[in-house]
Image 1 (tube, rainbow, N blue to C red):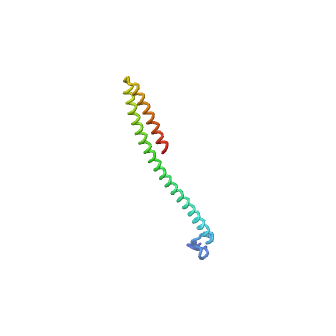
Image 2: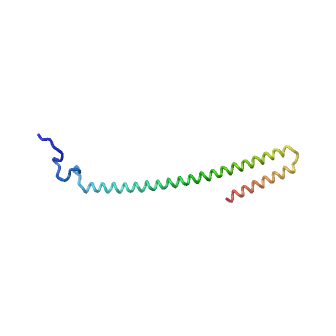
Length: 118
């Protein structure tokens, strides 16, 4: 009994195909290339979208940092004003206290108006 060697029992010229025809192989290769190109375009689209999201996040963080510093300065300003009001309220200068409160209210509305117009 002879042992089948490499290439025995296979028609000549079909050693690498294992019984598949060349047209079936090329169809699979074409399908794989088409799917690979489709996947590549989708990955490119997702990559560009994620880059745009990253830029938007950086801009939003910058805006939030600016707003935070503005709120901190406003808080400091209002804290100083309230401290002065407390100092004035300890005395009996009601007329001066009334003027100071009206001025503070005016300044508050001006700041609100400026922020609103931005």
